[in-house]
Amino acid sequence: SQIESSRATWIAQFGTVPKLRFAIHGGPVITAEIGVDHHKITYFGDTVNTTARLESLSKMLGHPILISSDLAHQLLLPKGIKSEYLGEHAVKGRGQTLGVCALSRQPAL
Image (cartoon, rainbow, N blue to C red; front, top):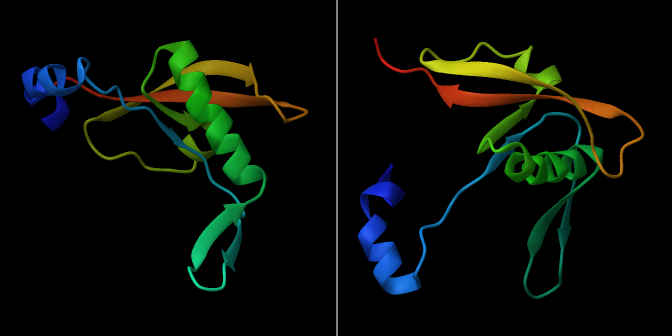
């Protein structure tokens, strides 16, 4: 990745290399434009909250890219991307568990 290829620069400037985490989930979202002078678009709802909780799980589970299993089963993943089911996990703020999958690149053959 571009971050890894610039590893020395990151360490020289900041003393560390950033580690990115991603979470993917789907569902209905409430969108609102707020503000008078400076408009901002904000997103609300269970889908947004669940995605944020899923992103938090990525650190705990040691996988940088997580997707809810419900969404993963609805998608046709691009060639070279694999999904690994990680089980059901309790998610703060939800009364039920969430099926979680990790996404990663398959090694080229």
